[in-house]
Image 1: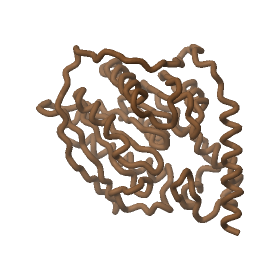
Image 2: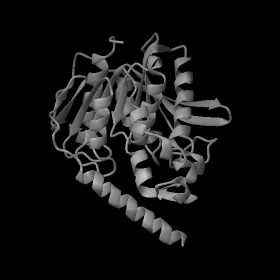
Image 3: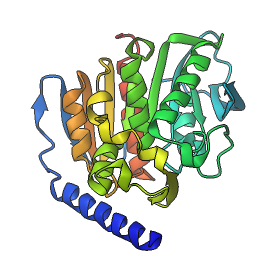
Length: 308
């Protein structure tokens, strides 16, 4: 019976995904008062020779609080003295810190202190502990990210007024949640194909918490009932778009996990945001798409260094 139930739920989830994909719009050149949508075609770009490049130094750095041990890696610009600007990087569901390494190294080469870490209970092959995988949710991850933010801001080599959050997929949604909760602590927000669809998918697939099984295979990653528990009375798109600082959203036009329409909706809700749709990119940027994303991130951070 459990196998039959899981198959039925998966069928519903896939059907719901098809509905959302069908509803995706192709109008990406619409301008609005507080943000804009731009379709970007990936092409070769010359590097900005005006910006100094640093060698990157890597260090393990664990953060411990209330029985939770968060493992992560620091990426530092070598020989850069003084307090540094920071970007905290959050991986998506079933990922780990390694998914964010190329972004972190690029940021460190630009003069930022970058920190990528494993979410306890939310990463494959993770080195963090303290939260069981079946007890993980976007809310436990929000708590984890808050712990990381506090620890980072307390470092003596960090400018605590210059800390930005960057997240991909579920990590993007969690980053937006925390930034909306503590807007004065966050310099800017960078979201890569953020999973603002989580609550809609949950409510479509299960209708109520009573219909959620004890365990569920979510995109190849087993989660527990706790993952869905609070999602039936929670509007992620509304709650996670209250941050009023500068926001960069980058999404792929061929994303079959999180339709780009969710980023378009979020872009309209944030007060100061800009959305870029990368043509033909999927859910995860690789190769030339990651290069394009890094270029957009670099430009965004330079533009907003001294504006808040």
